[in-house]
Length: 373
Image 1 (cartoon, rainbow, N blue to C red):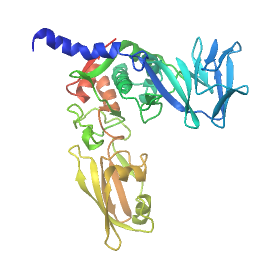
Image 2 (image 1 turned 45 degrees about the vertical axis):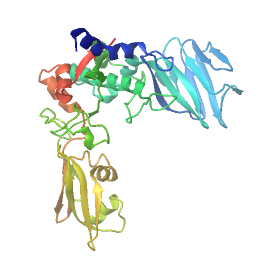
Image 3 (image 1 turned 30 degrees about the vertical axis):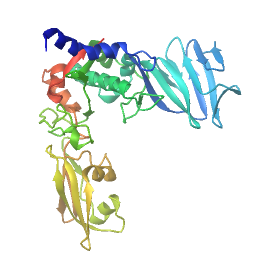
Image 4 (image 1 turned 90 degrees about the vertical axis):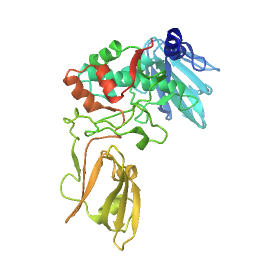
């Protein structure tokens, strides 16, 4: 391929991302589902306005109160319609929480959804501080910021639903608006403005977790169809300071065979033996076999085993099960799914003097940060 053609192929996806609006919206505008409306919606802000196809409301007092009744959205007893846009000359306060951009109230079935529509960079101000400690080194926060921005822009092309692009919870990225603003995360956002992670000509599929416990996991062993060359298991020697680098369940003593069986969903049974019968190349548990009193057995997926016992008890699928006279003990490493960026590892690398680009290259080999605006 001629040099010019290669250069065009390299920058074309970036040009398309910046110039192609989604559904008539700005290419940097993202829709975040805050939740479902309750019976009362209290909106506040300077120069507050609410507009629907039926009504326009201005609030010199800076406050508008709405209510939901029998599938209708009302203000002072008058119906507003199926979609209401709320804006202000500053952030909009929704039920006591402050959000940049605008808030749209959208009818969905017999409920109303609360959606914050805002610029991606403003969105990051409500995400980065929730996904990583702002007391950590700046370079770790910058790596986290690039990933959060990449994740958000990827969702613009693959929205979760017709009326919103992503959720404000751990199912996507934890977003809390302008509840608190801090200089450290703001600096990380400013110094990486417009930077996203690319693999060849596409936005990378990015994931992150708290602590890998010494080795990350390949994505294909966690989610079906998400195998990527840059999401393979790698050794990590930077997260040993994580409080869950090693963990034990229960913290003291042991869990009896009867209680463990019950916690796993086998009420009335007594677990006599449990063994790991399949592990991933990253050494995480894929499948276990449980043998109960009476001799019958059951196979349990590693993820199900963790979920049934609770994520706060079994912090990852990087574990082993030991049988002792008093019952069973689970010994493990790390916290989270283990794919992509190990956040405690990023912290460790930053403390060692590595910059955010080096951190991203380490955990996503073959990718490259690119500034697209």
